[in-house]
Length: 238
Image (cartoon, rainbow, N blue to C red; front, top):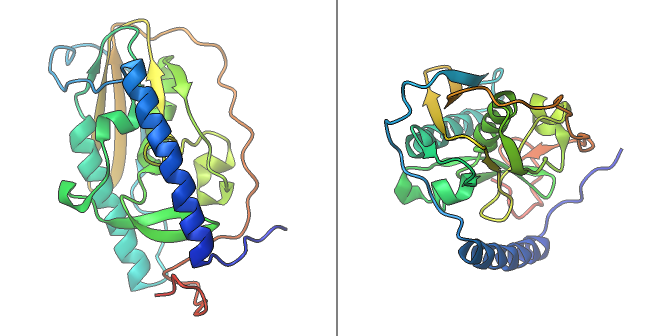
């Protein structure tokens, strides 16, 4: 079984440098292609719900106070993102982009530290845990018959149940995105209750689609969490 090597400052700096190049390229391409945000409105509130997806906010007992803190941070991140996405209405034929709609994730926008998969480890990161939201939106879009323009799977399917069955959708600002469109106007609704994340899609009709073929899941390899792994030699050690 493959186990990721312990991350170093050098590998992390190299990752960030490569990511910056990809982010600049994506920003330029989006500007050229005219990818834009879509307004939140009430004009489609009366349309029927053609698809919905929900998932639990908390999963099992967390082993440490730090793990519980990061789980609650993830929930805060889902609430902050839900405020930006609830009620977004997309015209027919236009591309909806997860990152274009949310913008860059910062503390000033209400985001907190959650867990993010990087270099084989679950690390504390501002906005960590938003993949639960992108995965829920992806699955609701599949059920509604929307066309998936862009979607990426996690590099390690051990991160969650959707990843293990090939129905996940990971995101990383701004070049690992989730994008979709439809031939009819549609509305997205995102609600975070005390226990669940809920995504609904409204449209005048459920769009026809072929059978949903899940992607081949990535290999599942052991994951370390910075909050509990206890590897004191790692530069990320808490």
